[in-house]
Amino acid sequence: MANNKLPIVAIVGRANVGKSSLFNAIIEKREAIVAREAGTTRDSISAKANFRNQQFWIVDTAGIKDPEDDFEESIQSQVRQASDSADIIMVVVEADVPISNDDRQVAKLALKSQKKVILVINKVDKINPDGVYIFARLGIKDMVSTSVTQSKGIIELLTHITNNIEKIPVRKESERLKIALLGRPNVGKSSLFNSILNKQQALVAPRAGTTRDVNRSTIRYNNRELEFMDTAGIRRPGRIERGVEHFSVLRSIAAIEESEICFLLIDASEVDVSLDQKIAGMIKEAGRGLVLVVSKWDTLEANENVDYDSILSNITQNYEFVAWAPLVVTSAITGQNVTKLYELALKIKEARDLKIPTHTLNNWLSRVTREHPPAGLKNRAPKLNYIVQEDDNPIPAFKIFGSQTGFVHWSYKRYLDRKMREEFGFFGNPIQFWLIEKHIAHKHGEKPTKTIESNS
Image 1 (cartoon, rainbow, N blue to C red):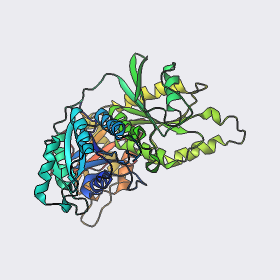
Image 2: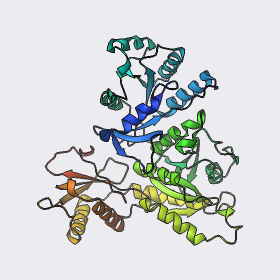
Image 3: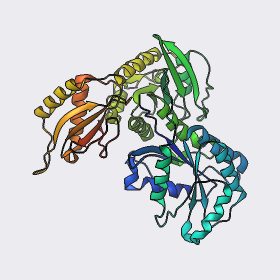
Image 4: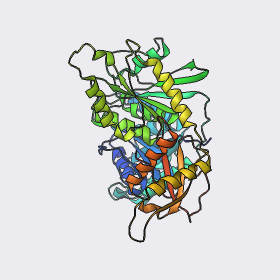
């Protein structure tokens, strides 16, 4: 089975060295971006990037240091969190500022992590190019010079990142089915975690942000080991606090990448929150199975005026882009539908492991394209000839070979997704389609040059 866990690249450094500007410069490179969730602003702290067919998460840790904070404590926390969750650590310094004790401390802690470390010397437009060599004193072997304001060095930096991604060891697959509990702070993740495990393991408190580490525990259900991961809540970018809270996003992304299935918790009293939808988009983009879990359902039962049907209809409408994800209402207090989550997880895993014979797939493709051929331009009509499933991909993923595939409209991809689900199911899982020009040879199992994923 291929390793489908995307590497995580974390940006660290003292305050005001240009970490956020560097992050924005990377994600705004048209070549470097795969999918940016709707509503993402310039102060976003994470993005999924793709450069030269190498995908990775990039996470900005800007804003951690308050002038009144103790630097030693804050920077140790910053680098420790990056060390725990990231595969590559980028240490950023200012080219026009002499090396400070803070810079030395960041570099020392990053190197101590035993992770791959890249030194980014930012703002080189302000100095003589030969002046960058003084930063070799920090002891970081790999150095890249950049100037965000002049767009210099960004491509070189991305090249350096992807070259090192190829050297990251493949993580071993576990026999356990790993399930991540995700959502905003104080939506009831820890309470549900405890209810699932039927024991008081995670600290539960009404104050938002109690969980800062990923709590783990394993149960056995129907002869299958299920490992649950309770993560810290993901905050809105503008509300991320200084200190360890800032790293909830990095750890949550790591949990998404480590898991096969994600339970996204939605507070029953706050079902129309855009951040919840963004998290669902992150899960979909990562190719993980998804269950929409409406938590704290018991809190509504005391209100006689609650229109339950309206609430569920609103959720269904807001999450139409992941219509394939099952929706379940729960209460950690009463235990409502908690056991059902076990069944849903196993059902999603079964669909995730489904492999369809190539001849069956091609009969299906021939039928659906005959019923509704893909439209195109004059003398540019797309033709989809044959399809194969990626055997070594843990995500339901399919390569469709044809001609003029670049003219296939996004609505047709939704049609293929809908027809695929009608025929084969894939309950609770996103489906990925790679549309490939048949005259371009691709080794089976590799990502094609042109990637087009279903949006349904």
